[in-house]
Every structure is written in C-alpha cells, then in structure tokens.
Amino acid sequence: MGNRFLKGAMILSISMFATRLLGVVYVIPFQQMVGETGMALYSHAYNIYGLFLSLSTLGIPVGMAKFISRYNAKEDYFTSRRIFRFGLIFMTILGVVGFTILYFIAPLYARWVLSGVPVAEQYHSVSQIATAIRAVSFALIIIPPMAIFRGFFQGNQDMVPSSISQFIEQLVRVVFIIAGTFFIIRVLGMSTEAAVSFSVFAALLSGIAAFLVLLYYWMKNKRKFDALLKTSDPTQKSPDISHLFLELISYAIPFALLGLAANAYIIIDNGTLLGGLEHYGYNSLQATAAQGIFTGSLFKIIMIPVSFAIAFGQPLVPELTRFLTAGNGKEVRRVLIQAIQLTCFITIPAVIGLTILSHPIYVMLFGRGYEEMNIMGGEIFRVGASIGLFMALYSIVMAILQGIGAQFYGIALLAISLVIKFAGNVLLLPRFGVWGGVIATNAAFGFCIVGSLFIIKKRTHLKFGILIRKLAPTFIFSAIMALVVGGGRFVLYRVFPFNETSRLSGITYIAALGLLGIATYFGLAWYFDVFQSLFGFSPSLKGLLNRLRRRKQE
Image 1 (tube, one colour):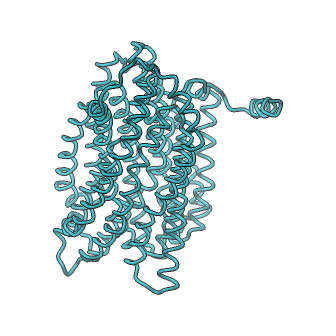
Image 2: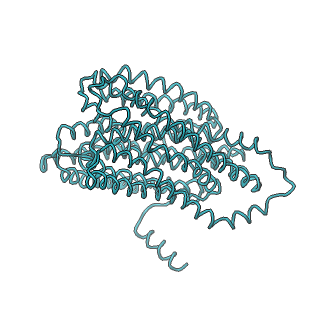
C-alpha cells in the first residue's frame, strides 16, 4: 500500500463502489414505481445528459490533476493556483453554455430517439422526452465548476475530497429520487412522466450538495495551500494565462473525448434499438422495455465493477506523467501492468458472476410480477454482462494512453469505433435482437483496446508475455470459480427451483451462490499470495489484529 498510485486508487475505488451500489439500490424501488417504460424515459434523459456532462467538464478533473502534478513537481505553486482560479471562471461559463444548448436541442433529440418508430406505436411522446431532458439540463450549471475542485485536490494527491463529494452527491440524489417519486405518484397521483422529470432534476440538487462538500474541504485545506504558495520561487516567471489554458485543455479535452465512448455508444443504441428490435419481432411495449433494461438497468449493474477501472485510471494519469518526466521507464511499465492487473482482478470474476446469475440478479433487483418481463431482463443481463469487461479494459488502457502522452491515437481509435458501433447496430439488431447490440458494443470497445495495447507496447516497450503471465492467475481462478458456481447452481436448482417472479428466490440464489463464488475466488487468491503481489499485503485475522493494536498504541 506504500505507493501513491495504489493508495489513491483504493480510496477512489471504495468511494466509487459505494456510489455505484447506491445507484443500484435506489433503482429497485424506483423501477417498482415507474416501471420499465419509466426507466426507458429516464435513460433517454440521462444518457444525453451524460454526453453533455462529459463535453461540459472537458475531462477537467484528470486534466487539472495532471497539470497541478506537473507544476507542483517544479514547486511552482503560483502557476497551479493561478490556473485553478481562472479555471473556475472558465468552467462556470462552459456549464452555462452546455445547459443552454441541451435545453434548446431537447425536442430535436427526442424526435431522433423516436425516429423509425411509427407514431401509433410510440410509447412516449416527443414532449415527454424533451421535458425530462430539460429537467436534467439544469445540473450542467453546477457540475463543471466542481470538476476544477476535484482535479485540484487530485493533483495534490488528496483523493478524499473527491471521494466524499461523489458519495454525498449520489446519496442526496437517491434520497430525492425515491422520496420525490413516491410523493408524486403515490401521494399526488400524478403521472410517471412527472415523477421521472423530477428524478432527473435531482441531479441539480445533489450537485449543489457535493459542491458544498468540496467548498468545505477547500476552506479546511486553504491554509496549507497558501503556505505552499508562499514557497514558490518569486523569480520564476509564470506563463501567460492563454498558454496555461491551452496546456490544460491539451490535457483535458482528449481525456473527455476518450471518456465519451460509453455514452456515445448508448446514444447510438437510443437511436437504433427501438426500430431494430421491432424489426427483430418485438412489439412496441417489449422494445421499449428492452431498451430501458439494456441502456438503464444493465449499465447500472456493470458499472459497479467498471467503476474500479475508472478509479484506478484517475490517479494513474498523474503517476505515469511523473515517471515519464523523470525518464523512469521501468516504473512506468510496473504501474501500468499493476493497473491492468487490478482491473482484471476485479472485473473478470464480476462479469462471470453476472453472466451465471443473471436471472436471479435481475429478479432480485429489478423484478416485477410479470414472468415474461423478468425472463427478458435476465436474458439481457446474461447477454450484456460481457460489456462490463470490455468497458473496464477500455477505461484503463485509455487512461494509460493519456498518461504516456498518446491520447490522440486513442481519439482516432474511438472515432473509428463509433462507425463500428453504428454499423453493427444497424446490421445486427434486426437479425439478432439484443445480441446484435452487445456484439456491436464489444466489437467497438475491442477495436479500441487492441489498438491501444499495441500503441502502449510501442511507447513503453511493454512485453505482452509478462502481462499475460501476470494475468494468468486471474484467468485460472475465474474459470475455477465459474465451474464451482455453475455446479452449485445446478444442485440448488434441484433442491430449490428458481422462480422467475419471486424476489425471495432471487435473494436465495444470490446469497448462496454469490458467497460460494466469492469464497472460491478470493480463497484461491489468498492461498496463492495474489493479494500480496497486487496490494502489498495478504489478508489474515492475525494481521488485522496487529494493525488494530498498532493503531491503538499510536
């Protein structure tokens, strides 16, 4: 746990895991109140908002972290503070611009989403989708300035403010969504569309809460930052502000564009899924429900393991920048291999578990009293689980490209992958249904991953043989876990047949088989000392007691 990359990654990982877990838990009562079609409307608004959020923040948290890390290494704290101050002004303006554009293009986007679906078969109207999009657009005013604060703290190797603010943001959002939806539907008797519009508007309220948390940490640490500012070399001339902004944007925009992949792919799904699935043979209700499950519920689940890759990627960029600046190629290779190892160590078993237990997971979290809908949801989860692994690997290799200064290669790969995704959807959805959408998504991600790995190999002299040997235990342990859980499911089904409409049945299967899988995988990792090589320690009761005693003595 000694190196800064691993420590920062662990802090962000815990926060992101808790945040994503909240994001899944709230969906259970929310979907029960608004239904699959309400979830589809929610995803229509949130997916385009996510794209605009990425464009409005311009990848500033990581770009700012890289900028601050570079100038702090030179002990030029004056320049660091200067870009922070002007960055706040710039990002506030950018947020207002993003809000204005999204607010006014909402009807155009709504028409695009419904294109290809006959008017008589449209489950939501253009005005309903546009209203939900406009409700969430207000959050763009507050979120971009927050990105400056988060990037500034991360550049100073302090991941706590970002982590706490992210968790508070999600917690407040969940509370407003559940309470607001219940009050609007059950107390006021208003429509599902009204409840969804308020739910997406909660993004603004939660953003304000997170911003206040960041302000608290800024005031708390301001004296320390001011002390560093006084140590800046007064004879060192700071570049003019236009040069600083160009430098910051050169770091930030590529990261923002590279982070758009998932949102861009989902937006392509939003414009092609309904028509494609109806050509495949779904009726309007089935197609709308399938879209809500695929672009909403499924992605909420797979983003839990993917969030670890994102968490590993954020401290990875400034860490790789630091080693490259020092000309330490050996440390560059060590850190990037460790990042890929950590990503696969978490993501591969999670994806396998979701594939094997797809139906129990869907029924437990999102199931309703309709067997046909639950079977559809379980199948979509089973088919789409693999997207999680591709998305996680994409996130980490793109962070590596950013850290080694090869981000523009990543942008070129992403641009080609969008063509692959769109063409794949158009060609495969009418023939294979949801399978076609999954194949198109994984092909697009896979193209970026393979291309990026060859660029990384060329730039860092990474040996694929070493990487594969490091990953071998994860592959082997995951395969053993799959066999054990698969066998356990076969036995459990004989004793306690799974009921597609019973949440209790889903909970029973997850509790029994989930614990069996976790015990198998992490037991193997502990026995063969994988924890020691990855995290620098091996979990044991004795070690935990010794740590507690040392802390008590301190």
